[in-house]
Image (cartoon, rainbow, N blue to C red; front, side, top):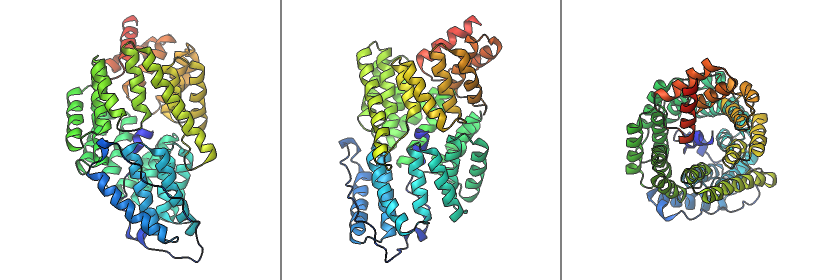
Length: 445
């Protein structure tokens, strides 16, 4: 759930003073490789950028002078993490952050703050089992820290341990109720079928943040998406507009407006929004939407261009991990959907199962396998996977549409009718073709 992690990667406001104690050891670390800040796109050179440059200069200068300085290595790592979040240049900035995190762990193997930063990046890279194990190691060192329980929530959700995720979310919010804990509570409520509770929790997350701050606006976008999924498009649009007023040129707010235009059938307007978003941040999910839009707009050539860019980029990112463990990124679920867009169902199934073999209990992964089988017209094989995908009572309209169509094709008419009717009754903002297919299928039942 990479995109679900994005709103969780913060600058550790509660980062304890103990993290900034300088530990000196006789053991010297290797002279560090130097990671510069990449120049941001002109539209992103705001006040944030000026402050980021100042912080980077400060921490990088001190770090290079003192090879045993823990405090500034951790602070520099956090600058890189946040910059990756803002720009989407995760491959470069993950490597930069992990370089200094590993240096800290060479100096002090049990450093709690280094471990939670490492776990954070591992989860962002979709190395979910590694991230969970690192978080568990950190929790043993400090069982009273809220952030580590947030990482345990994330790791358990992604590996399909939903009961453990709920337990850790309860512990997290009891220690520190804040934006991070509210947003996690929101997602857990969402995947357990409680949209009303999910919206309430995400509203609390937004209220707990500073308007215009990137993490606050990310939470606002997640709230808008919840409204889209429940059919309240006016509130969703208002939130996207509000986000842009607080943070001009925010890529995910532009993408949100693009999605509204796309589902309303205004494909040219949607393409304009997504092209602008794509020019601001490196995110394959935005390119995926552009590929879908060009298909809808009748331009298969441009669609194929974006599909190829997605596949080549995600494959390259994954392969880089074979040479450098600091930058590898698993993206097989995303690759499965990219290949589906290109009608390469065999490749889609290959990548769906690559993801499934890593985390067979995750509901999203099971949905992916089921949907690939459906597209391959092997619907009986889809059944056991869609059953697992529904196990938490998630009411996501795309999931319910997928399930309803699979049940319809396997002649389970009552199940299909119930799910497809539930999807369409609130008029959720889901993909145009999927909504049409669901409506057509419902009429035949």
